[in-house]
Length: 511
Image 1 (cartoon, rainbow, N blue to C red):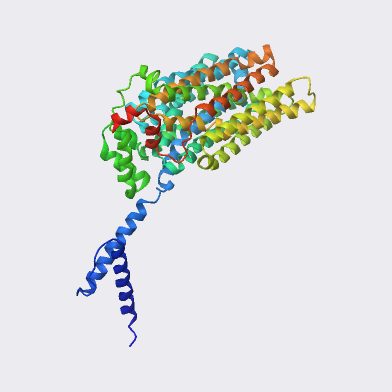
Image 2 (spheres, one colour):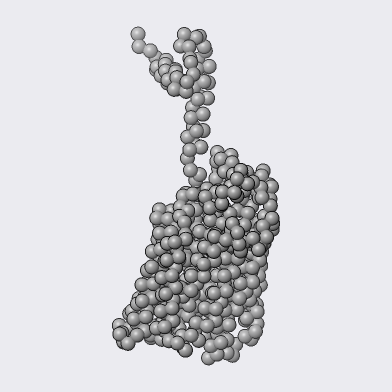
């Protein structure tokens, strides 16, 4: 007699239970009388155990942390917007405020913002460690809103400069906090990709500033609208950050383990909380963030990572990228190319390279992208040098110069743009991460300020050919430096990277 369907299902389940039990090394008496409910209960318990093991072996979903990273990228969008807001509007600003033709004053409108960023970067590490990453974002929004309002309503050069100084202070605070936050809330498998999102946001901010600034030449006072618009993304950042998770790394260092678990659950999912906390405890050990003195960052066990970080940021700026961003309008104008067309092409190349970097960051790795980026940037500068020499003239010089500039921007955004900040947030040990990022970015802003202040004057005095040769030489130096000093961090957790980089005695102390 054939068994009924329900009996066949029961027999099948019973046989599967016997096999799975034997595989686990348990003895099961097949002749022991048990109720069918006990069989089903035992099978269900084993199934739950199998599912739990399976879930523990899976990687955390990127979707949970994505929205938190997206909100944090508003700071990068605002950063990019303020970098480009004076590109199209500088001429009308100088006309309205009475300093047209004064290259030193025009340079100050650009570089005062960078000087403020230098001041902000000095304190960003202590702010990020003191009040946390979320509150740090909200604090950086305040001076940016105040500065944008002051610039939009200014009646003189000094009013504009004061507003730009306030904006710059917020700009100095936001990049390191964004890098820290994204690195600390992202799953290891997509940390490079998420790090590239901030670079894409910066590109979108730059392009938005260029497009919004286009009517400035035709409409009197339009530049004031451009500054008012800049307050919108930072206001949204301050508001939406209230609903985002705090960095679990920061919470754990502040001995707030329960809150850190809640943050991990929000970012990774409940099933991954225990594993994340266990891995975090291997390297952090609840260290107080203020136990490391500033002087310790400059020598001893932390010198290597500080040297790598500071040198990478210095070479990034000495490559000449911000000279292109700040003064691309003037460069295109010298070849008779309408500035709005040239700047649109610059923005598209920057965005395209950033999207490619987002796709390749967790596939090729950080080091490969850095090497390829700096090498191609050096080649781009060679095109610029040829264009500025007697070897090229007329339309040939224009095509070489414009093509070299666009190639330079594209290749910069492939690696030299997004990688240094991401790499620093990965290789710096947790107990010095915020302060060390602050110091490295201080170097970044000092050189950025000098380039913004003196590029136009150097262009007039020594000529384009020599200045582009200098920029290209720094790109070649960067290739050599990356090859010798930078390590690959692709796919590794922050704890694995820290344990690999710290000297053995530090690992013993933390064990």
